Length: 319
Image 1 (cartoon, helix red, strand yellow):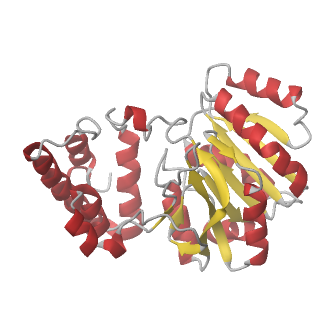
Image 2: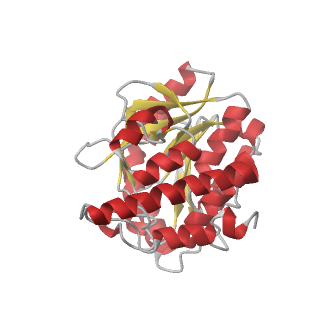
C-alpha cells in the first residue's frame, strides 16, 4: 500500500463527507491507497450519513468506516484507524492524518507523497492550510517553551521582536522549510517513523498530541517539513469548536489545559513546566491589564487566566 488516509469523525458527518469528496480524485490518481474513517462514538446519524455517502459515490473500493466503542479523543481515533494496518502484511508506506473540517485542493495529497518519495530524510510533512478564500493559515510551528509562552501571552510588539526566534507560529513561508511541528489537520507520516517513535499518545484527549509526536520523531532522528505546494482548506475549529473564530470567547475546555500540562511535564520535566506556566500566567496578566487600560477589545476565552492557573503544575503538580 502506498498511502493510508485516516479521518476521525465526531458528530461532523457533513464535513467528513465533504472531505472524502475532495480526496476521491487524489486516491484514484495516486493509486494503491486506502482511507479509514473512524467514528468516535458520535451518537448521532454520522454512521448512517457517512456509509450512505460511501455507497452512493462508489467509494467502497478505497474507503471504509470504522465505528469505535468510545470517544477516546484525536490520538485514539487516529491510532485505531491505522494500528492494525501498520502491523498487517501490506502496511502503507505513508499515513496521512486529515481533519474532517478540511477540503483538499487538487494535487495536494500528490504533492505530499511526491515530496516524501524524493526526501527520504523527511519523516513528517505538513500542508499549507488556508481559508476558503486562499488566505494562508500559520501551520508550521516551533516547539513551545517558557519564552514562547510569555511572548504568546503578553502580546506586545517590542517583546515579540526581541523574542522573534522563539515565536511558536512564525510568518507563513512560500518555500519548503524544516520546522518543529506541523498541524495535524493535514500531516503525512512515514511508516518508519511509527516504528521508531511509536503511535500517537492517547493520554492526550485533544490538542498537543501532534506536537508531542513530532518532538518524539525529531528525537528519533527524523525531520519535519512544511510543504506549501500541498494546499488544504481548513475550516478552523469546525470539528472541535475550540478554535472557531466565531466562538473565540467561549470558555476553553479542561482537556486543552490538561493536554498542555501533559506536554510540558512529559517532555521537559516538572521544573521547566512550572517555569513555562509562570511565564504564560505573568504574560497573560500583563496583557489583561494593558487591554483594560487601553480599552482594547476582549476576544479571550472566558475565565482564561483562572482556568489556566487551576490546571497549571503550580496547582496540579504531576497529576
